[in-house]
Every structure is written in structure tokens, then in C-alpha cells.
Length: 373
Image (tube, rainbow, N blue to C red; front, side):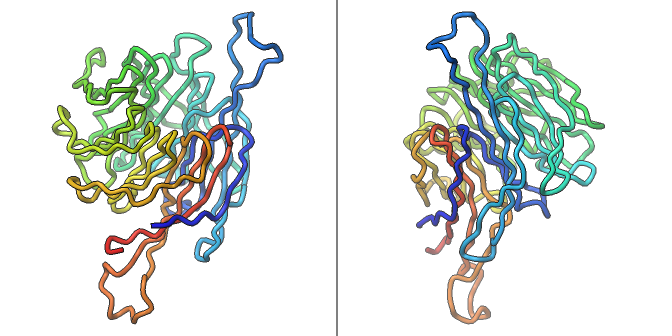
């Protein structure tokens, strides 16, 4: 299956995060986060001061989606410390879309989208990072499936710390914080089907599970199945007990969350798997940012026979950010009369955003995926 590239954007700073808004009515909004280490005028710093990492957040709106030439229109941009991760709240809060970022000075910040030209910061909180050189690395909201008023955010940092904050009335209130990994805690994520359970992955090659109702001094489980740093974790949005993880060891693992001793299946993608994104409507596919081997779309509908549908290799640097546009369209794949077609004669055109680091590029592309193709 062939991907079609529609647009390439120079983000100026190194790009590492892409997130499409998951909220109906706002699904045409895409965020791109960047991170740049400012070069010292001297060859090396000798005064012990922390390195300065700057960043810029871009907000785009998808236009011409129903045509063969969709494109992204820049709505606004915000300068801030270097961005390591961005995540949307899966549900509106007070009727508006919110998102959070973690940054290079160890902060978690929450923003609200007022309209297509205005993004306003609501609150910020300093994570309990050991020193000034600590980075916020990842975050996730707990409301993919949970629609209660208890909206929380989990985040991780470069000192191995995990933090859970409750978001309410425009503020972040820390619920708990603990040291989960010996080195960088690259990723933290909720079990979105049971938000008392969270998963973390670190540079110590450990995948761990935690019960937020218990003292977090001890994990519920620790897996050594990955042989290098664990840097991506995401719950299946459709099937309750499925979990996907990725690692620097180049393997994507699928798990049954009830039996975490051994994965269900695995696939080597030839590059460290920095981000995993389930296709949000059917969860038949997983999109990966595969660092030194581009981007992949994997058909995971048959656990016994995982298939790579697409290997997108147009980026020339580290593949860090990737996401599905939620407003992708189904369309008939034949000129025959629609009444004569069964549902499996249709294909879905998926619109995807990806970004890469040192070449500071963001790309908009699409692909038609058809089970019978």
C-alpha cells in the first residue's frame, strides 16, 4: 500500500511530538511540538549551568480534507521551553478541548483551545525533579474512556520519577509522586479501561505496572521482556485487555493486561519504537514512530500474523512524532453501484501527521487501507 505525501513543513526547531485532537468537532486540529538545544558560544560549558533547551508549539488546522490535496494551515504558535511530549485530554473540559505538555525544565503545563487562533495556558506545575537539569518526558490523561469528573494526568521525568496530578477548577493538584525507574522514565500511561492501574517504562529496560490505590513503593509487576529501554505504552481504545509497548530493542509487543508475564505476540520493526498509536476507531492497526527506521503501520487484527501495511521512509532523521487524524474518511473503492457492494468493498483513507528531529520536518500524508486489498 502506497502512502501519498501532501505537505512538508519546516518546523525550524527539531520536531518530536505530533498529536491530533480526538474530540468530535475539533478533530481537524493538530499540534506539533519542538525541542532545540541552544548552542553555547563557547565550545563547551564550564560554569556548570544547565543547558538551555527552547521549544515552540504549533497548532494547525486541516483544510481541503475532502479533496485530493488536504493541507495544514498554521493557526498559531507559542514559544516555550523545549517540548518533550504533548497529549490531548480525550474529553472536553467545560465544553472546550484541553491539552498538556511536559517540557525541558521539568514542568507540566495545561492549555485550553479558545478558538482556532488562540491557545491559552490554564496552569502549570513544577514536577518533583531532583535538580534543575531534570526533564519532563511524557504524560497522558486518564479520560479516554472515563467520563467522570475525576480527570487526572500522569507524567514521567528524566530522573525516573512518576507523578499523578488531579486537574480541577483550572489547577493541577499532585495526588502522588514516586521514583519508579533507576534511569529515565521514558513513558507513563494509564490502563484506560481501569484507571487505577498505570504502566511505566524506563531506560532500565523495565516495564512496570502500578496500582494507584496502593503504596507505589512496589510495582504490581515488573517485566524484563524488553531488552533495552521501554519508551512507548498505549492501551487499546477498543478492546479492553490489549496493551502495546515499544522499546529501543526495536520490538513492538502486544500484551493481555490480565497476564503480563509474557506478551501475546511481537514484531521487530528495525528501529527503536518511540511512539505507538492505535488506530482509534477500530484498533485494527498500530502506527509507530520507529526512530532510525521511519514510520510503520502494522495490521494487528490477527495476533498470530502481524503484517506491516506501510513503511513510510520520507523523513531523513529520527522518527519521533506520529498520530492518526480522527476525521479520516471511509470511501467506496469501486465505481460499481453502491447498493451492489458489501461493507468490505470499502476502504478508509487515513490522514496521518508525522515529524522528525534533526531535519525539523513535519509531514502530512495519507494512505488507503483495505482488508481485501
